[in-house]
Length: 223
Ligand SMILES: O=C([O-])CC(=O)C(=O)O
Ligand SMILES: [Mg+2]
Image: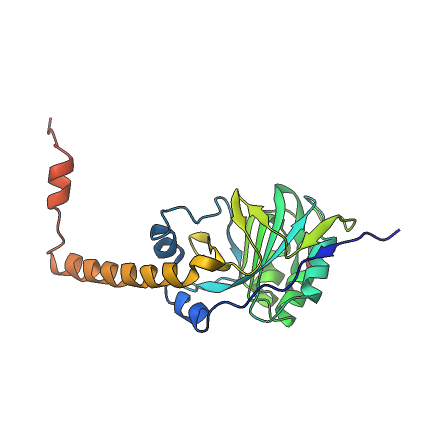
């Protein structure tokens, strides 16, 4: 008997231009202005991310049984170009959730990033054919295809809640997620922090970086 997989409605699109703006920011800037609270610990780049690249887009969420990718295949059929596939697979590294074939197929559907709270495999194929891939681990042990699962539902990745349509940002430092309702505000604050950090960079280069706060916070006792 075939499984039933509930597919929730398509969420509203992100505000115009926001994805492009976020691509010139970083996960650290975004999480800093979000109370250092936006991250999915343990999910890191494993394939296909070029140095300095930032992946961004609305979350296409999937909840699956750990070690099973039946509904992940189905999610690729309902993807909208520009989506970041976010797979909540319980953080288990016992079995891979996707590999080179599914990763390549996802790319042909316009998916721009693969975020898996679980393991993946076929790293060389993923690096050549799939969107940048983020996962908690790597194992050659393959997935089951039995279900159950759900698509565009609320999920949790590494303990971080993600709703379909939330803004996902992924780079060398991991994953940050901004709830849909706060996207405009957080992106604006992150841009401001980016400009402030550029000024600090220039001050470091000029030897004028303000260190007075350190003396106020800490007394060094030399032995
Ligand atoms: O067998 C699977 O479903 C996972 C896999 O290796 C692939 O997608 O290439
Ligand atoms: Mg494979």
